[in-house]
Amino acid sequence: AQSVTQPDIHITVSEGASLELRCNYSYGATPYLFWYVQSPGQGLQLLLKYFSGDTLVQGIKGFEAEFKRSQSSFNLRKPSVHWSDAAEYFCAVGAYNAGNMLTFGGGTRLMVKP
Amino acid sequence: DADVTQTPRNRITKTGKRIMLECSQTKGHDRMYWYRQDPGLGLRLIYYSFDVKDINKGEISDGYSVSRQAQAKFSLSLESAIPNQTALYFCATSPQGNYGYTFGSGTRLTVV
Image (cartoon, rainbow over all chains, first blue to last red; front, top):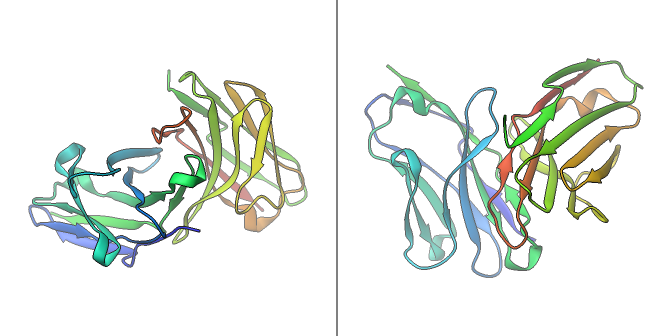
């Protein structure tokens, strides 16, 4: 069965600083990988996804993520954080043989200092 | 109107009470899911349905039941609520063969 680990429960960065949120997955084959963002009182919104091809994936709101098979990682990055990026971020993995099912990591809560 | 609507948005109930959380969608998706979110644990799958006649247990289905009344409606019931079912509950939908999940805004349930 697949699993996802987000090692950082909380991260605080200053506005304008760069950001990297870590995600490690466990799955025996090539996974489908996703990053979602949850703003307070809202549902989850898809930031980006990786299915195959180029390992650097661009998403919405200026986010990108890089799939590294050798490290079983799919870290999310943003060059310059805005105060509106404060939210909770979830990494998820989907398995080809699991019928669209997503397994989520525990989440990372991002706080942005002015 | 939202694509995936969950009602109620917030609910406080007493231990032992039966409660139903409702989800309706206008996406036309075949697949519907119920997740619960707990701090540090992310979202965990409770039940999922691939069509009206197909209901499946997820990883944490004990203490819960579901009903798929129509393609657009998927309800989650707690037969006898207990405090450790206090959580944020999300309904989601997706089309067949596609990971394009759409999430509702969640129901915050507190069991006292």
